[in-house]
Length: 320
Length: 300
Image (cartoon, rainbow over all chains, first blue to last red; front, side):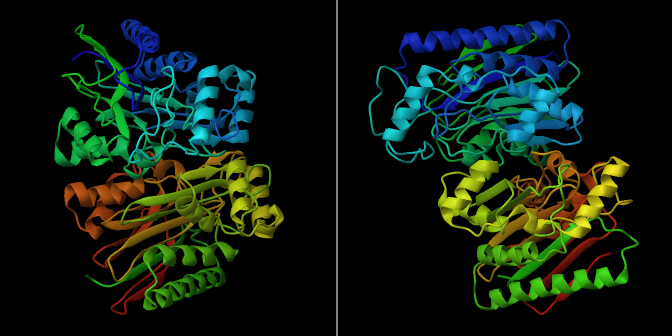
């Protein structure tokens, strides 16, 4: 078997009518990030490095909800979080509440490698970032006009966008996010496995539009949004609250192990268990399988395997 | 239905040289908490309410590492965290980085019941606490002499204390299944002695330190990092759900096979009214009781 990589830019209610000027840049970004991941594998980088590298790239891209382009809290600020996990050792690192760190995923990696802890948050995490000399910038760097608009709409609709069972109230304005807020924008993540079966996962996000200050989602919770062990690596996206309750990332591996399902079967099974419209994930297994199931309208995603196969997609595709 | 069952813990990993007097003190507290829970169960109070009220009691008493009596950060302050989960619909609430909230578990409950989110932390959580009108106190309230002394020792030894040469008190938790077969779990802690500011452990992480579903309720304690890596609480439920094990088998399986080099313990109940505790540490402060009259409080 060869290496395999899969990445996502968020699952959600991505309208099929997404206009080209909004679709094309995102597809290009997915292609670009996939290319970076593939090049890293060709250069024999470890899956942990590949996953981190790809997520850094996704964080830097303003069209996804991570790093620059992160959605805003109810106070118009950003609070970013990320998580990374090594399947072989199950070592992991997570961060939350970041406001100035350019690449949250790299801070998560440093927490994993340079502290006796797994998870640092808010001021403590920011202080650690400075100690480590990680690149930090003024918070305004992360804030995009699109997200200011999204927040405005969410606040006008008086809703935190978490309840997909509620009817969509309004039409899409100029292709910008509708009142449900984060339809076109979600967490980012990358999972990677090398030809020896070493697995890694990395996830990063700005969280939920109009979220309360201090709100932590599924991304930095090991077993919820992010998980890897000797069987598979998983990165989830969607409704944080549902992914937490459903311990989504952990369950994919548990179902493979306890029920003997393949990666694709296990991933589909788990996504099926979570309420419709809330969840998507990307996963790779130690044997090089790839799965990218979602129960939302769409999920920005891409994958590639060493034998030359690659895919970039947003909505349903036969090889889901 | 097998009737109600309840278990409480005050931390895994006990100093084998703990003076007899302290051991008795701990057992008295555990027994008192069990009695509070049992009394509530006799009054048909639902599991989710019972776990909250028992953990409040454990937080208020300074003996264990939660609420008052919490261990200290590297800065000598207290940063508390907690989580609660209601089995039937798997609703959950968690908080971290609390410095003035008298009962973290109750704030976790409010996050679950009164906010659109599952987890609030640091100043955002404190703001929410203020808006909810929960009881707030000065950070000093939580700090005990014992812990100040222990922090000093830990700094001298330059270690994070999860090391029985410098034993520190442990996380607290409670799991309950009520007469209707509803399971619930709650965990609360001050974290690790001499921890970095901003460090979050396993206790507020759903699936790691706390978990409850239709089948069972679980609360863990011990090395936070080990509990997180092994998603310990969810593991028990997953072994039951996907492997078809009963509660005792699941707990046994998980403690034996999922901790690798890590040291931890857990308490659990099943919807059938069973209760099971497991630990691979030297001791775990615990107590459990079932409707048929069984009751046990223990350390070793």
